[in-house]
Length: 520
Image (cartoon, rainbow, N blue to C red):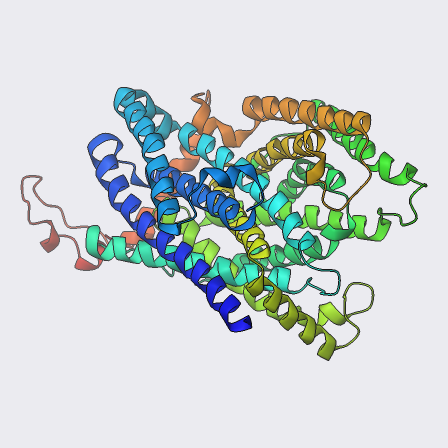
């Protein structure tokens, strides 16, 4: 019986992975054809189609495998083949709508892409969808375990392994595209310098620490308070960016203090019901775990700032999508390596859930057995993993523009998460104390803080000048750009003088050394 459950669960994973591979490759070809004939920006079209379809497959498969008792599943046939056909057919309409819009407004969209508006809008939408999937997927995943199984370490080890597999898969698609379609191999090891390795190690380390502190503290922190604490991300991002990445920030503005006051008000309103709840026999609120979760919310902005610094330092080494996927692949590998080293934390005092290494290992094996035998838990895990992964890809794009903008985009999702808990109390799976007045007040504070911060960022942040269309009044940035490209040209062709030649002479290689063409 156990073997049968393992095989059925493995078949589910293999099924969704094969479906993912087939559809992503079809979309890769389709986006190349579409972009060449319409926009000539295959990366943006590919990201739009692939991520929308990934979210659709994940959510649909999650509903199909994990919610047999809900009315939604009654719309789906019991046959897995019919379910796949239903998903594929339902995807035709969104693709058709996107294609019609691109054909009708191709000049406007071309202009928006050059300004970066399309990239920002798509990234924000993907971050919103991924944040909702991650927020509820992780909470439902941890809640679905029985009380006699300690699950903490498996909740960070297994997702890290799946994330690395997804990154390797995307890198394989990039290599296949460059070799067979573009017939031009890029530089994939541009990061192998002291600065590049240091930044990637720090990015992977802070990413792993964010997962470690967040996953262990999540069961002990109310979901409403989680949303409020994550909403403090823009504050930490602004402070850290001033130190690590100052060129992406402007001077301090008095309006930021109003935003800070609104965010603090949301945190206080989320905290009050937990502190005032003296009737229940067991207090759900825990001050130490809340501080640990707050540490996770500080580490993630640091991760974003370091990503923005890496992208800014190595911009132009390869195309945008390849640059970000290489960064995510290397830092995910470092994250997985460090996560394996975090195993002793699981049986450490206070932080861990086991008393010894042997007990921790037994809990780890028992958690894997439970995931393999419970389709509901496996579905929650897939929801969390895919949501977090597409969220990371979108963050990689926004961090290249401005880490503060990425933090603002993350803030956009938090009032919506709080609103979901307000209108659907049954999703409050841990039974934390909820009060309609306090929850609504928290939602309004975070909503106004988000709107005010977004307005300020669009008008004043330097990272948005590249896509708002504002021209620079002075020539300082133009001079910096000239100096930058002058250094790049000197580094490429060296200091040796070039031989004069007739402009009509097309045999350029006899005048310029061949090593100058190796860069292309």
